Image (spheres, rainbow, N blue to C red):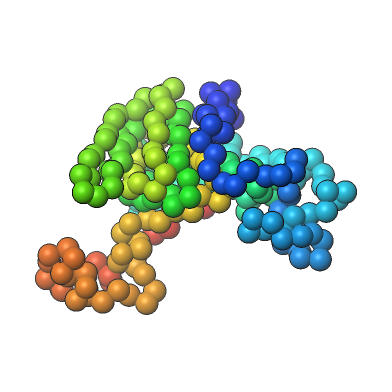
Length: 220
């Protein structure tokens, strides 16, 4: 990873929103008998902690963008990097296919996101909450940084002719992601088409069509 990508991750430290830890670290462990429960994860006995608990090396590997949305998100959150537990930060790599690779409109319920563009040209934006629903948008180039406030709907779209790569720092060890179309039209069980038809002011046949689509999850 380049030094500029690391800088983008560092920016996220200023936006940490998870509860502050009261210890140096709390390495997540999936085996309860090896730890104690803290902040959603069991913590490994500090005497058993090793350097690899704080290490992750996959963000140099390009994600596969041969899918219906043309993008892949590769996370390094607490599930991939146990040492992040209770520290309030995480990072992701996002790869976009040329001419239309899309990280679809989504929200992070627990995190603000700081996006750093490493390669390519991205059209990005977010929408504010009701009642104004203001739309803020920008075209980003290599070296540019853009912030998506916590919980707001946002997206990135590759408008260039080449692959694009971005890194994002997030102010949570487990930011979560709600992809809007997937959640609304791909829920299990489905939301009533009567509800959605009235909400979107369209015929129920339109809703039935949308609910019949395959909604792809671009998280690797």
